[in-house]
Image 1: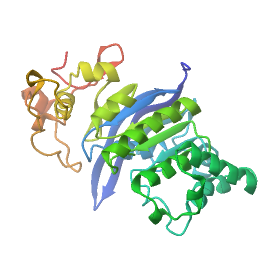
Image 2 (image 1 turned 60 degrees about the vertical axis):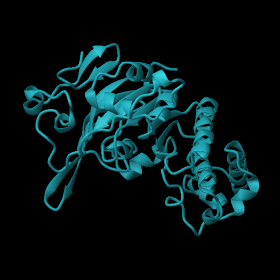
Image 3 (image 1 turned 120 degrees about the vertical axis):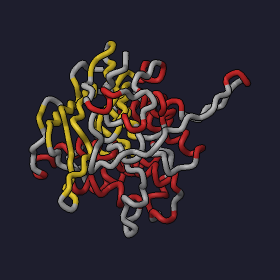
Length: 318
């Protein structure tokens, strides 16, 4: 793995103007992603994970901050200037059916991006479609089918094939298994891991399934109300979580105990995530935090390092 960062995100924020009010979707997020790594993004629904993924791809424009890809600042590039980079930055959507045209066959859907980017001849593109279908575990005959004729698991494999059609370097996996049966989830997870090794891919893996994130990721960032409250190498984050929100998230993972002594009650997170229109003063998590003190309610904690590559935004974390 090269020491050069493939992607750098610097203090990126996104606010949407809704009926005269600012909705705070992402607030001052920063991270680096090395080539060949998987960067996990976790948090509850509404925490800003998918918005951040779309900001990285410039499907949404950042309100503040900078996005640097392969040493080049792409933050203010126009859509025309971004077009050559689209081949290198792709996304796997949560709902593959919603992202596909019902009027296009599977083969047409996979070939479509190659046509747009003028890749190869018709024969070369058809060969590429056949190769991709085979690589993701689908028979070549599937290319003549329409999306409604396939199962959810098959459609997600098509979504993966489509994302790989342009030979990307960076792939955003936006909740790619949440709509699948558990048995199919395992197959797709293994496929994503194999493809990363085969094609030297770099992933941003977005999920609320912490067990899957722990398995796939090298580095994990925990988002709450659009802010990164803790970030660390995956092994350290799951063995030594320091932010109260991270701790509660990990305690909520359903695990099969090997003995009666290992049995423990699930710990739900109390309350609901606050409105992004009116984020709490001080620490954004303090209204739900069982450890909150007066300082948490009045003073916003700065993100600080508490160990090698381990950062946390909490007054009480050590």
